[in-house]
Amino acid sequence: MMKDIGPVVSRHGLENHGIVKAGTVHWNYSSAALYEEALRRGEGTASVDGALVTVTGRHTGRAPDDKFTVEEDSVRDSIDWGDVNRPMAPEKFEGLRQKMLDYLEGRQLFVQDCHAGADPEHRLGIRVVTEHAWHNLFARNMFIQPDAGELREFIPDFTVIQAPGFLATPEEDGTNSETVITVSFENKLVLIGGSGYAGEIKKSIFGVLNYMLPPRGVLPMHCSANVGPDGDVAIFFGLSGTGKTTLSADASRTLIGDDEHGWGPGGVFNFEGGCYAKCIKLSKEGEPQIWNAIRFGSVLENLILDDSRAPDYDDGSITENTRVTYPVDFIPGAVIPSVGGHPRNVIFLTADAFGVLPPVSRLSPEQASYYFINGYTSKLAGTEAGVTEPQPNFSPGFGGPFLPRQPGAYARMLADRVSKHGADVWLLNTGWTG
Ligand code: OXD
Ligand code: MN
Image (tube, rainbow, N blue to C red):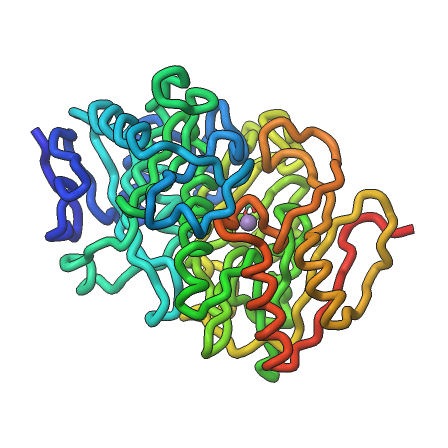
């Protein structure tokens, strides 16, 4: 029998998503309660500093080949179909949804209602329904918490149902494997099955924002952002592993966010309420802010602990893509709410593993568009399945895997904003130079 418990249960219940036969549904649990549940259910262990330590299972990075967008009439003409945006027939989606609902029958579920977007004018209400407590804690860390008063009346604009234990059947479902991440804009629903990599939750919503915000006058960006003592905002575009998180966590500037932002009429704002930092080779001296954020409330993925329960950050035996998630306010002085003015500096980070690009170049407007569309970097090991050594990679907008629309649409918006607000654009090589 379905039973709703938790500090605040939304009036807009799970039956609105077709979930009518789950077991106990845990609504909007606090970090402490999710932590306790995760430990009790054997989903993880506690580190010496009180972080929750989890393993993501077979998938330790995103699975781009398993990502689909439902080919619905209302979106067909505005999606850039191909290897990034693989079409799924609406009937296949419907079939998967039914199977997912059957899978959830009788199971305990965790629901977190949150916002994506720190700017109230442009935010989206996101409901994340997960099979495990720890993924719910991830969602709570990564998105923005509504006020307690808003939760009761919360109606999501978009919902993610994430069940790593649910496996697709490729022959029936038209998927590439048992793993599936599929978004339906008409149903306002993301289904994630077969992967416990928590990053799929945040990135599926990033993809949704990348689709929905441009027509509303907001440029979605795969970038970090921080602000200097005199209020100058800098944004750092870059693919995973190029230094976004590290460079934005700069003790002489305050952090706005580490990975996903919008640039709207009023300036930049974080889509997220948390950070998802890489941990491989993390050191206290190198990245003190991130180091200190690894404590109770944070979630470590795929780290190995020593006998004293201290994480071994040099151990990449599960994956090179070891991660930690924590709320942005774990970084001292982070800007809350995470909004800033128009950027004065726009920095493209490129980790050139081949030593071709100079350390730093100032770009003309034409060069800026060229490098933005090209999005050159080297893909480093770990974040995507199957990448074990550096590969040259061209990723439009420094975030190709997350762009549902044609890259030119984003590039034009960037060029307009850069020229309107007189920002300087730089190309910074964070890889090898020589
Ligand atoms: C990420 C990514 O994990 O960009 O943030 O892949
Ligand atoms: Mn990212």
